[in-house]
Length: 518
Image (cartoon, rainbow, N blue to C red):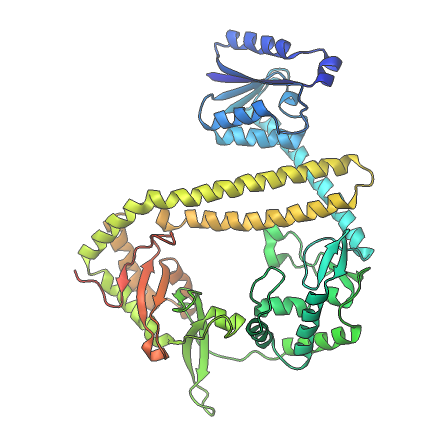
């Protein structure tokens, strides 16, 4: 057993408890001799508080644990590692990931045993309960602020945040008024977005307007002088499914940009449009987002056009997603006939299975790239995890302050809100990267596997229900690029990339406009 010792004491603790660094080391060394354990290094943080994990020797210890320098960490007492339960458990979790067991001499807790693990799990349960109670108290504080008409943080077009209050940004406010005027005049979300993009306007984050960004503005009561809070709960776990019907909406302390009359008119129009019966159309678009616009590279989505004004029949097309959501200022429709392009793709997937030489070449080239593909994704994921853990630690720090403060300053609540938003964003990036790592592109394949997959796929696809073909195609195709042309009939498939290579710059093209020769 290769053991690392960690000892720590602050000046105050040594004075109060009378147990020095040397005393801790002596006790642990004697125990290791009796147990025939080999001590590989002693990590010391002297005169440093245990309230934070920002300690030089502790950081070095955790780094060495990743490199397999030792397989057990021993401390004189749990409080030496951390006085905060949440921090302590985060260190234990990191050690477990690195296959390092933990032993506390005074508490006689050996995390490598079932009893020791059970004790740590109990500690974890109480720590989680404590954290949830603190979070609930924070939420209560933010709820109370909202009820008082105070802003709880975040950016919104038309306003700037000064001294924790919303202050009108005149240039942005004029744009907001313009958007409401356009909506009241009868313009729809897409028309407004298209018009703003043509006129050079940008969102708060300097992006093009979309139908969704216009909808968000039109339905946001903050512009009429109200505060809305807690409309969605537990976003990181539930996303939009966490919609809360009993959200808070009260008169805010900020100055409104539009009048109550304008707000009332827009909401009446929005409600009327929301209750319009949906247009019925029988058709499916299995290549949605797999097809890429030949101009901007955005995923293409389904679109239908009547054969004639009097006809009840439609012709199915795919069109650029950017054009659909953001208008002609961003891109053109670039229509392609759905029936023709779908049939082409289905035929190519079937034909490729009859070309063993091509399949063998594919397998060899793909497997050569697998290791190269993993590295940048893993590096990015590790960076995101570090950022996420730092956000978690910062939240724990502020929660600790709140726990010990009767009336925490509003700046703490604002910072907590920002950190929660940061965590949400990092979690979304983490999910995306983990999805990338779980793609088939990360696993080596054999010629037999590829043949079996494609053979089975080409046989199954024609018999799958239309609405399920899209899901099936998305499991095997990475993207389909389209040739440029002046009309739908001139646009055709340029190449199809199967889902064996997730790298943006290393995709291996499996099939072209014509199947490669055997």
